[in-house]
Image 1 (spheres, rainbow, N blue to C red):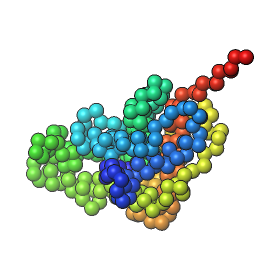
Image 2 (tube, rainbow, N blue to C red):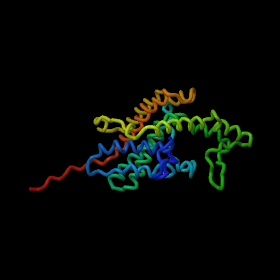
Image 3 (tube, helix red, strand yellow):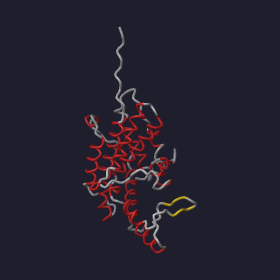
Length: 276
């Protein structure tokens, strides 16, 4: 999902067209507040989205390609559990941060946990794009511009091979062009919906004994069964896909972010009885 330009602070462009991660986080936070026990701290939406965009996983991809990058892809039919492991690590770290009242760390972990869930449930991230990049990068070292690696250029062993590889990757029907085209369509769809209409109703029973891994996989296979990305690649955007994104995909993502954050909340200590 798009997030980078969403870090523009207090501008009319915030959460418009780009900033999908931020918008979903804000909606999930507005739902969570209704379920947070009294006297239990959780970062505000403002604190959480501070760690999105260039301050989040997408920024790491740009600044330091292939250096401690977060996993953004999960292949449902061939899952290596890497993304899920990272998600559970963020859940654990968030629990510790909340228990120790480490507010900055809590906001960081909440943002990265939400980011991993959103990417994990995004249909475009169910296509093995990382494997495609590995195959197209005949020359494994990144091209450098002003001393900084440029991840988007597919280097070949010759000028001709570089041109061919980049056409397959960035051409009109290229792998990355399809990927970004899908995410742009989702971003536009999200930008047209007011936050209050994105807020989903989550039954109270869903907040009981949350098994995050189990819940995530259930949501993943519900989304994957729709073959949204496969249909997009074949036919492009259409009204049916847009409706499914609005009514099925976005609610699944928001629900999972909310439950993931709730699962990390420390249990509220009972009030001590006053001595007579």
